[in-house]
Length: 85
Image (cartoon, rainbow, N blue to C red):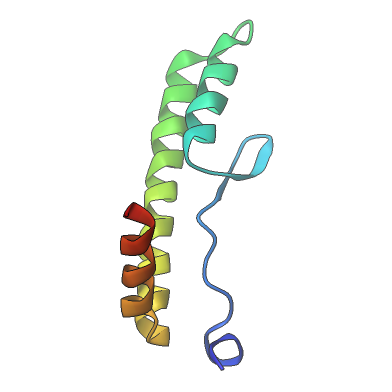
């Protein structure tokens, strides 16, 4: 059905430095780890962190677009609403 036509729903994960799949609060923890290393280039890490957060934010919109293309947007909204109860 959807898989053959649209492929898998995009993961909400990104790659950053030594991490091939990282997301959510892990990005903040990775930033703290990188900043704590001796000789860390704070400005470079901050630039990378903001770029990583932008890529991570984009993954949410990619998932929403996939939901819409596949006709699953309303089901996803219902599922998310049920989780909040």
